[in-house]
Length: 225
Length: 249
Image (cartoon, helix red, strand yellow):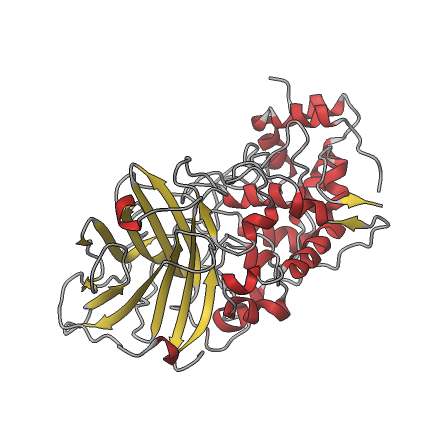
């Protein structure tokens, strides 16, 4: 394989110019591609802008994918955090995963609600889930366990942060004006998130139009911190 | 702005040699050592160094085409960036395989895909949603593999504090939704962080997809923020031989 430098150099584009161009690509304003949704909105969830950041209510990512007759949905929050961080289950936060199966995609056929509650033991936390497709009533049990009802699987727990992006390189590039981004360095490496994970059989969702629309939302009891 | 220094055909050749571009990225770096770096705990974004003011450019960009051009990988023959992000929901056609922007699997390189969607002309042979992901520009995979079976996400790092996984009689709130106040919302990755300006962030997160769709409420905001990015890097992308989706004058 011919090297990039020989290929391009023979055509008049110096490697330095290419570096400058790629550097420019990375010299984006502060928020572009800085995260999926971590620490946003900053004045509510980012300690750099808020003296009382609402870490438990900070959505990090929303995922939705399909295979083998089931739709999988995951929403991560309270992250990324170091491995020494405490747990972030908060009785005052309401989590919603909205799923629209029919047009318009702005009106959810299913609003799946998650609430956390403290148990009797010092480290016992439970989750109560309402609105699961195909499930009558609520599904309730300890976090860090897989709960099932009518084919639906649900679990809340601590996981490896699933997002990957060279944020360090991005910020260094901004600071020093020299390209530092690397495709072998993941800022989110080695950190954790809390996540809600669902697996829902197609039959539980009923008739689906052209596509599913999925979005997450967090709300805090009594107002923002 | 100068004219592209080499042809789009050559650009296509470049993106056909991902290892070569990976080498370029390493060469552009400080040490080029290629070693994995252990990063510290995340810093709040507000503690970062302020973004330099973009160098003024004589080129004027019109980003309308970036939102209306057909984007591969979505549902519908007229799928566009605009239809992907308005309303700001993840859209998943379950009859097709999942890869962002058709839904989002945890393994999808969404940052590189989204950068391509925001900046590149999708009508050019050799350019598409995966142009940057094919290099790759950012790390292409997660640090830990995802599981094929429930719950899919990887186990936590280290020996962190975790809940017991046992217990009963949990004390849940039963208050009505009206007793809660919105904090955050998310559909597509990075849209709220990349295409919504600081002064609009709280109201954006308090809004709903129905609000998004009403007269394309945030389209002007998206365009305004994307325009800023083109002012900063549009000529760099062009000089790299890429055809951008924005139109210049």
